[in-house]
Image 1 (cartoon, helix red, strand yellow):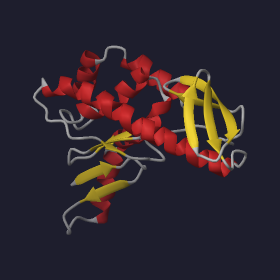
Image 2 (cartoon, helix red, strand yellow):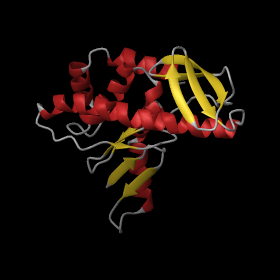
Image 3 (cartoon, rainbow, N blue to C red):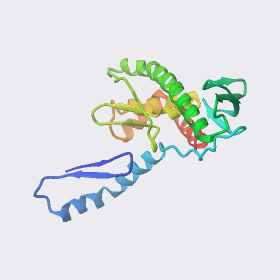
Image 4 (spheres, rainbow, N blue to C red):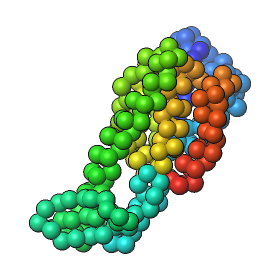
Length: 211
């Protein structure tokens, strides 16, 4: 019987067709603590950023630092980071929906480039450990910062670009360790401790900044 917990909190049980329902329930009760630990683990990677209004003067994070939105009227659409401001120019510069679209696209573009670069650097350490890291899938995930699948696929949320580089590296390292230790057992955390002794502080910082 195989029991799997998914990032969205769903639980899947695969059992022989003749397995009684009572036996399935007994197995689930027996593994209740493990199931709860897995669900809590996934919970820590779910983005919990407050809703944004996308108006002038509002602060937005980029690599762990706060920048204020500065809106400009322009015939061309453009987003540029300069000084302490995130400049957004467009014909509809005072329309939150327009500003949101431009800022979101800018974050996604920056996130894909920066996170992919960090992944390449960190993955090199795992090659030395005998792993063959896959190319990361950079995709938006409403409830997660990163994920690993049993097929060896690693997905990373481009919205991580809002976090400090140290926190991005923590999420990447965490997911890459799954290539060696699929489950969050003692061996998993022993390797995490070896590769990143300060992982707890990075994790805490990630939770504080993006909560």
